Image (cartoon, rainbow, N blue to C red; front, side, top):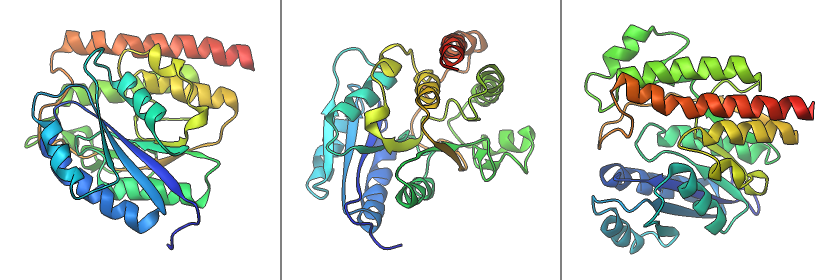
Length: 268
């Protein structure tokens, strides 16, 4: 595909202690962006990492001029990091993804290519539609036991993944939004329809429930694009292995579903 005239994109990477993953991800994103986009920038929004992420980005900036670094000192928060990236981005079109290696460069390319075809839509990387899967396994073709097997040499928690699948089924049943992966955190679209309160009201990944529901209420067109979520190889997972902690972390998602369901009913 040739470059599309005036195609501009801000790629946001909210990070905390992802030094070893960023070493590989940023060069890959830079190469891909040059091939597909006329103008782009990569914003690393760092929640005051302790693994010398700042030094890594400083070194990489000598080679990649479109790489920007934003360091946050207070109020560590995934949704607030994304919000700051959106606010400080140069271009109206934004894409963000986790920097833990779970969303590989092929998946990023897939979302960008879809968006180039139709910039009026919002494209969500989804683990639960055709072509999607969890931790290296196609969810349509493999069992939960095969997914467990793929995690043996990774830094991910099987329990966290199982509960994530369960929570998504609960959220899908509660909201009927038409979106199956309501905790994706992998999206591309026009930033002007991303309302600030969706991020401010949130605790962690529940921001995505608010965000998607708000887009649905606005009448925005959303398309889920299947991708295989890869196991973490470098660094430590931000999700606990403790059952009670995971349940506690999941409660804000249920709260978000209840709030969003009421809002969607009021708008219908």
